[in-house]
Image (cartoon, rainbow, N blue to C red; front, side, top):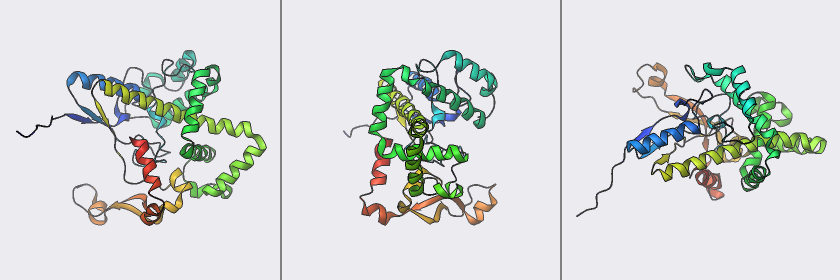
Length: 301
C-alpha cells in the first residue's frame, strides 16, 4: 500500500493586517502568537505571511531595503517583551500620538513609525540597566556583524536624509565606499555619538530576530508551521545594492510581461509592469560561490 501523506490546511495573511487588543496600529508578533493559538485549536497546520524584511518610506513588503534585516514595525512592544521599556512612558506616548485611533481603519504608517521609533529609542537608552539583555544584544551584534554593520550605517544615513533613495543623498555619502569613509571620519570626531546611532539600529534588529525566533519555536511547540514569502528582487534603494552593487545589473529592472488578468490595469495589459527591482549579475554571483544568496537563504530558515 502506498503511504498516504497527511493533508494540511493553511492560511495566508499579511502580518500588518492582524489586530489585537494591544497592537500599536499594525499587526505584530503578539498578534501572530494569538493566531498560532487559534490555528493550533482549529487544526490549521501552517501560517504563511508576506515578506517581513525591513522597508523604507515605501511600506510595500515587496520593496525591501535589506535581504536580511527585518521590519521593526512587526515588533510587539510591551514591558513584558522589553523589560527596558518603561510602562508609564509607553502609555503616555501611545496616548499622545494616537491612542485608540491607531487601531481604526487602514494602517496609519506615518504615525505607527513615529510611535514605535519613539518607544524603541526610549528602550535602547535604558538597555544598560539590564546587564543580561545588554550582553545578549552585544553577542547578537558580534555574530551578525557581517551584514548588520553595513545595514546600520545605511539606516543612519537614511535618518540623515529622510529617505532610502541613496542616489539622491549628498555627494559625500552616495556610495558604499564613500559612506564607509564618512563613518571612519565620524568615529575619529565623535566615536560615542556615531556608535550610539549605529547601536540603536543594531538593537532594533536584535529585537526583531529575537521575537521572530521565539515565535517560531512557540509555533513549533504547537505543531503549527510558519511559512514566509521571499520576493524575487530586492529594492534598487537597498543596503544590498548600496554596498554590493557588483552583484546587481543596475541597467535593467525586473517586471512582468503584458497580460490580461488584471482587467482594470490597462497599462499592464498592453505594456506589462516594471517592478523597479534590479536584475542579478549571475556571473558575478557564481564567481564568488553565490555568497549573497547563501547568506540570504541561511537567514530565512
